[in-house]
Length: 150
Image (cartoon, rainbow, N blue to C red):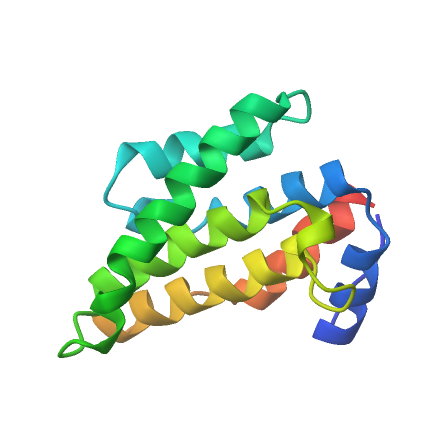
């Protein structure tokens, strides 16, 4: 297992993954925040993203579901600090990022990296609502997850 301890190393490691690995790792990043999602179709989209054997039609349907819900909930991000509504949006955005084909992302910010950032945003919203942190930060959890995949 590789040791990753900062975002620079994380991004480098993620950029070395295949497209399927990026999708699976990006989906794994959403696991710790999926409980903040309010709709089942985004949860199912995450499960599809986690499957290395998902076919193109399944992936396209899952991306459409996650992206559609993220677009629908985008307006929640400007409201009077409904942190859980914002977290819900960021979870959907994280799932959509994981499902986005590698060719549609820049080389510097691939799907797994975008999913990581969106999952962190969801966790930050949850922390604002709850007022307490956890022993392992979301970034540390992502470093560990990526290290387990490479």
